[in-house]
Image (tube, rainbow, N blue to C red; front, side):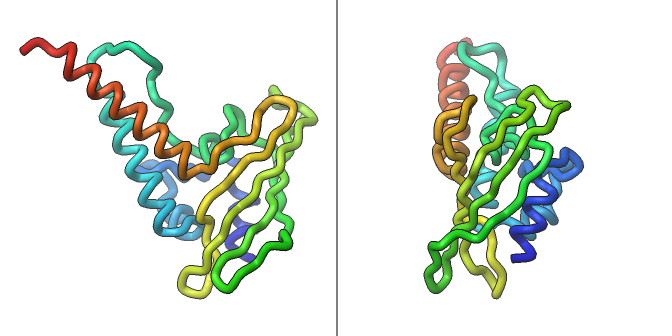
Amino acid sequence: RATVQSFAGDLPHPRTNIGAKPPADLRAQEQWLAPALIAKLRQAVTAVEQARKLPEVEGPDPRVPDNGSVLDSWELPSHCAARPAAQKTNRKNTVQLLCSWGPKTNYAGLKRRYTLQLIQVDGDYKVLDIVGHKNAYAPESAPLSQRLQALEDEAAELTRQSNQQAPN
């Protein structure tokens, strides 16, 4: 539970950036995230960073994953707290994370519930995936692993477009 409490306490603060490359907080990645999610995060960041170096192409500039991406939110919440959920298996567990946005944010008074899917790694639970549940401003989000894959796919499409537009 120490991993989840630390994750819940530090994720809302920009001093902890679990993006995949420096100045990312690599210690936080290893402390909180399952190896499979770390790998997916690093793949997405690498693809996005490469796409952002391309000459102008049609389409949006992919967002480099950060704490806001993890929570599928443009603005970090003011506070998050973890609550154990009922589902538990031998190596997997789910925990509910409740995040709230305070009065000095664009979403004052908003709350959003997330489900953290955890897996046991070397005797400690690590975050395997995260789903944000529907609230007043956002629909239910796809799992983080799928959102990271979508970023990687968007970056690949921009690279493909750039290669097609490049003079031969």
